[in-house]
Length: 415
Ligand code: SF4
Image (cartoon, rainbow, N blue to C red):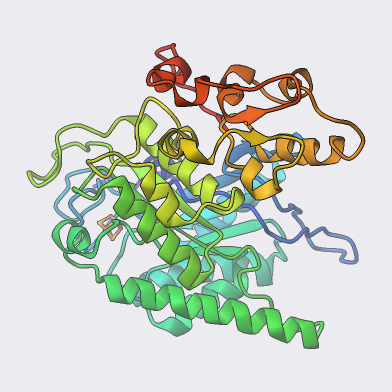
């Protein structure tokens, strides 16, 4: 077979990486090149692969697989060993050169590197660590590095990855252990969570050490994350939310990413024929948001699911919860505590904070609240002000129909 050019490899391995959703780069410490004559690269805390930071900057990561050869046979994966997808493999030096060249051309601010498993898990992990080592030690690269680690690899190698990377992630792959056993027979749920536990301990130890010794080595300062595939097995949204909550609590994850299963060429017969609706993935992200920023417990998000254990697709989970627990409403906007106001559909964290500030100086009327929200119609059934009482509205049998988005295109950023 003719030798592939770097461009051909890039085409295959950048495309193969698109199935990985977990490349957000939130929470890394700001770095810059000051104080060094040879350091290059600088990035700061917020951003995703191709997304805008709060300051408007687009943070881009070069997102690649080291190789899409794999000795494992996960049914849902286009790179599984039984797939006949075109294959390619970079050497560590090639990935380093690409990263530096892209960086110097100002195309990227960092690298997201994952890989299929070649030869053994340890061999693959060694190659990935080598990429990060060369970048950091030989080129003093100060850009962002996210390494996807291989749970089956030696913990010492995973530890080394964390010493070079800003973030490490280990995919749990599927929401249930039984799903993992069925669809990823080479993987082991206990091994995956064992690796996550090891990363968590290393992060805690490094954070403690740096409090005592200024020059103690960093370990994955942007934390660890994981990804779950949605819709490849029979797991319900309640299962997924429960698993995500357990992972957040158990392993101090920065993020759990959801990736709607997408049918792949020559798919295995054990997989569903159709991908789940994309809005399902979005509803799960909204539920994740409720747990991380709105104070909902996993059990409360689960209360928003229907009899089938899934979140409704036509309305967001916060509205679904409020409609089920109408007895909690209406809330007096001028008196209710923050944690209760955060339950009002249509009021985001920013709006609630603005309400808390504003009500110190004046009594808020419905019009004042309206100025803080995108849709006062969504908020009105759940609040009262001196000039507004929803009376029967909160309890109307058709309230859901009144509030559900009318358009085909469902709202993407509902609070
Ligand atoms: S380990 Fe499984 S998910 Fe990862 S590349 Fe190999 S087949 Fe795909």
